Image (cartoon, rainbow, N blue to C red; front, side, top):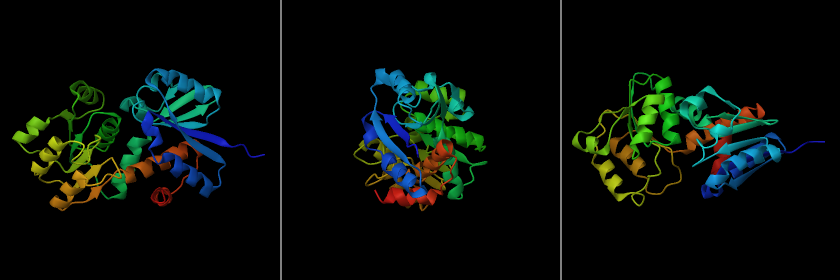
Length: 274
């Protein structure tokens, strides 16, 4: 008798908007694993109860999305080194009563850089945002020995926390308005990807020269009139949206859950079907 495995994604209402359930379900079917993947909305005061439910309901593994990537950490029996340093968990494995937390967003981002042929060693980077995505990006850039990682975020104490625990240095929009920054790669980890998201930030981005920039990455995907893509086009350099980091992260998550390695192209093929 084949036992069905159950996986899920935990988040706020955005858990129902992600393509992860459709993508993972299709991949499970293609590789012959009897498994289901479902989204669950969790209220902020119920994170602990949700972690207990993973055990009570015999959930085999879970993804964690905004805004609970840090909130779940106290409930992990074991944390991977990367998740511990980054301070964010996006993948959970249940082993009996024990939960182990990982961060595959970071290594998925590294896989993306490698796939696109960008060597971050001795390069400078400018990261927009100070949430879990930013922490994962800064962690990998630091690990890959980027010479300079500037971080611009709206919440000063969160930026300071990244710098103290992971690395990088702070910059602000006001500083960049006075003197356009020099960076070899730009990475957006904020929710802002179109003029409607923030007309003010769109104007700021349009006015920047970003000299010596070689690549622009926006961790969001499926956004119309993408201001980061427009900037990359104006600079004549490659643009990458969040699909590539997503499929690479999904591949790493699947390996943790099942020990089966599925090529990123297979995830991408499935992603485009939905």
